[in-house]
Length: 320
Image 1 (cartoon, one colour):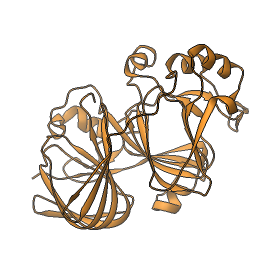
Image 2 (spheres, rainbow, N blue to C red; image 1 turned 180 degrees about the vertical axis):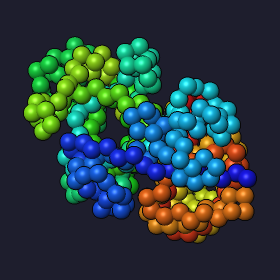
Image 3 (cartoon, one colour; image 1 turned 135 degrees about the vertical axis):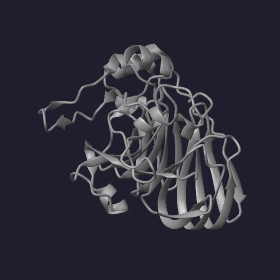
């Protein structure tokens, strides 16, 4: 019988973290500066654990290695996606992520394209999203001279917004924002600017990666183009935010009952951000509540959602 795979998140403390993951989702966090919940992760820096089924207690990376049939016999050495929730109690560092080739050569892992769905945002919250340099030489000069106000673009943020962050984009989540992040399974981050913060553990400024940032940044900045679409599946309103090379991201506004068919043979990642609903697969019903994270394996071809909930779903793209 085909069954969903429920996962237990792994938490990471960050200099910019807070208590939002506990306050919003009731998670048992390790401290009052917890920044990230790695909810669906097979990355070695924080693999999530299966909570149910025959595979209870297994790490997702182990499941990927030993039971590739659950993932449509997909190729690749690593599970390609990672779903996180980030609680930015302070600004994150301004960063750039490399593409697959640069990351493979210099870091020995995948590159990092990511996206953010904004769960909560305080009034006046903003993201750092792109830059104003027109040439790589100008970009390098502004970075090395610390001309951050002149270089960095900011955009206002509101609950329910979605942002796509392809590799090479200069970016940072700002203070007072909580996002669900869908990304390639990579932990490579090149810091350009960290607001001159001192790491309390070391008493020193955190490491910057200026040359790597200059090497990998997209210059000039181009606003990503999203293939936004909307449709209804019964009483579920589906919003496609993006369908790109590494992943697609969708919002499921469950306002009753919807019967879904999976015709592409790809597994799905689901995160329940609000409300509750029932998931029915192969005649078996599973209650879903706020804060749950799960995978619908490729062995599932149809499922039903019934209730009142907000879910962010994703699936691998053709290049994942």
